Structure formats: C-alpha cells, structure tokens
Image (cartoon, rainbow, N blue to C red; front, side, top):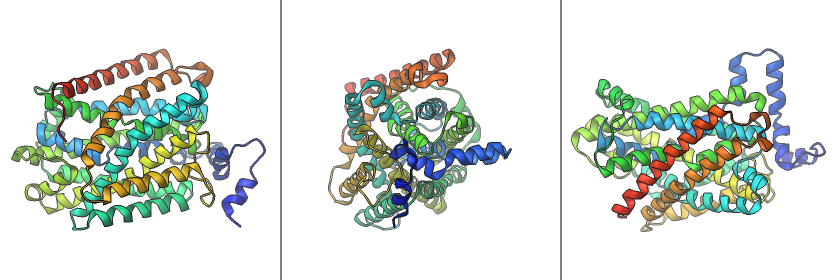
Amino acid sequence: MNTKSAKRRSRPPGISPHGVAHVRRGFSARFATLRTAGASALAAFLAVLGPGLLAGLSDDDPAGITTYSVLGADHGYRLLWIIPLSTVLLVQFHLVAVRIGAATGKGFVGIIRTRWGRHWGYVSVIALLFANFGTICAEYAGIAAAGSLIGVPAWLSAPVAGVLITLVVLLGSFHRVEHVLLVISSTLALYIVDGVLARPAWSEVIAGAFLPNLPNTDAGWIALTASLGTTLAPWGLAFIQSYAVDKRITTDSLRWARWDVIIGSVLTGVIGLAIAVACAATLHQAGVRIETAGDAAAALRPLAGSFATVFFGAGLLGASLLAAAIVPIATAYSIAEGVGEPASLDLDARHFQWFYAAFVGLTVAAISIVALPGLPLIPLIYSSQVLNAIVLPLHLIALMLLAADHSIMGASCSTPTEKVLGWGSVILVLLCVAALAWSWVQQPPLF
C-alpha cells in the first residue's frame, strides 16, 4: 500500500489535504516538545531552519550572479553599497512574508484569493507565471553555462539536471527535498573563496560597501536598479511565504524563524558582495567586459588563476541547480493556491496533483527552450526581468496591505513603526523601478 495514501486517508476530521502534510510531519508537535523539554535555543532554531536560508540564497541565481558580476566588472568598488542596502530590504520584506504565512496559514496567492477573491488570485498567478518562466529558463541556462566550462553541451546538461531535480521533488518527502536543497546551497560559499582569491583592495571594498556613491552614467543607474531587483525577486517573496506555510511555521515559532530569515538574507548579501568584489578586483582592473556569469567564470582564469575559475563555475552550477528547483516550486505553489488546490511538497505524487503537474510542466518547458540550439534566450529572459520589475512593487504593496489588515493578521498585524519603514522601502523600490523605466525610454536595450 502507498504509505502517503494511507496516511492521507487517516487524517483527522476537518483537516484539509494541505494540512495533512503538516500533521503528518508533526512539525508543530516536535517544536512544542522541544520547547516543553527545555531544549536549547539551537535545537529550536534548527526546527524552523529552511525558508529564510533557501529563499535568500536562491536569489543568488545565474541572473543575480550575472548582475553582481557586471556591477563589479563595469563599476569596480564604487557601487558596492547597493548590495548591503538590498540585503536590508530583503530581510525586511522576507520577514513580512513569513509573518503573513505564519499568521494566516496561507501562501501569497492563497491569501490574496481569500482576502480579495479568486479573480485577483488568478491575476496574481498569471503575473507570477509569466514573470517566473523566463527566470526558470535563466536557471537552466546557468546550468548549461557551467557545463560548457568543462565541455558538456547544453542539450545534455540541462535535461540531466532537470530529470534529477524532478525526481528529488516528486519522490522525496518535504524534509528530504529540503535537505537536498540545503546541501546544494552550501556550494555558494565557494564565491566567498573567490572573493579572497581575487586579492582585492580591502580598504576600497569597505569604502565602496558602506559609503554611497551616486552613479555618474545611465549604465550605473541601471546597474543599481538591477542589483536591487535581482535581490528582491517577486518569486522569492512568494516562495518564502508558501514554503513557511508548508513547513508549518506558526506565530509561536516566529521568534526563531526570524533568525533563519536574517541569516539567509545576510549570507545572500555576503555572497553577492564576494562576486562583485572578485570581478572588481580582476575584470574591472583589466578592463574586461562581460555579459553573462559564464563569461565571468571564463575571464577569471588568466586574472585570478584556474582555482578561481573552478570555484566560480562550481558556485554557478550550485546556484543554478538550487534556483532551478526553487523557482518552479515557488511557481507551482502559486498555481495550486490560485486554483484552490493543495500546495505541498508532501502530497501523494502517485496521483494527479496540480502542484506537481505545474512543477513538471514548467521544468520540461524551460529545458526544451534552453536545450534547443539557436533559440533567442536573451529576449525571453529580458522580458521576464521587465515583468519582474513591474510585479515587484505590486507584490510589495500587496504584502504591506495584507500585513496591516487586522481581520486576517489579528495580533500579528503590523505596528505603526513597521508600517512607516515598510512603506518607505516600497517608495524607494518604486523610485528605482521608475529610474530603470526612464533609462529604457531614453535608450531601449538591444537584444
């Protein structure tokens, strides 16, 4: 007998199929046991570890690595300060998303559907679907780029990676999938090694990271906005809320979940800073221009040594694999929530589930596009980034409105201070997006 099916049939009366995953894993019970038994703070923290770490580190995907590489290669240490600033905003809005998920027990699209009706839920799904698909293609393009560094063609590397990721998601339980993703995420630490191997001028790094310098060119403004946008991705915000619900984070466990979010976001910023520093210390000094993360890895060889190239390429592969799993998972959560179906990594994969069907469909479509030669990837990926730039402010505004809604948040409703800081950050993001839009009007990008 199928173990998952048997456990689903034995669920307590009144518990939804989505809720069964939580009851079955017994997360709440384990957390309560840890607290009652007086377990250490470390044990309680490990019980909620995951959402913040995975959502944060997956932002360092191929698109993010490319953006940070260009920031360092084109502008040196001058604009590094945008990464710490973006990290602060990432902490702020990821905390809001986790708090909403913990208070309502619903993912982003699920709570929109509940609060404003199914039609707005459908609109949210469509917007995230179109914005996310180009990003998923970018993740598999990153896998192909990493494979090309050792001579593996895209038609082989992308499908093999897609099959392995799909098998892990379909056949693994929630915790098994989470453990695999956490192991993959550890490869991003290689970028920190790369930053050290580049032998940067540390005094200039510190000055560039903490003393804001305004750009003196349109390209500089675009680089700033792109760095902010690649850190605060709409799919990342949707993922952390839905994943926190799937992990059964509650308001009682928010104290520890906040540390997970902070640590994940800070590590994201440190890795992004290391990438930019490595490129600033080498490629910028040599006047080398790059267009992709793969270009950066190849260009580092004569400037920082073969080890730097190997670490950069290995980090690119790990980042691509992590994001190639998480972005489709985030989108699958949104699609399932939008149509009112269960959304969980613990569902029975032997029977049709909207969640798994969406994940497989997105993965197959992205691999098909990346693996076929001659297809115009750049316009597709660029268009997705335009959509992300449009969706991001709308997503942040929705988060702020939901977090301040006492009817759904109850005692977890935003405080006046949180509202002021949150809306101030939303205005900052809107100004950055407006600046990027103005630059596109003045000089439309060439594909």
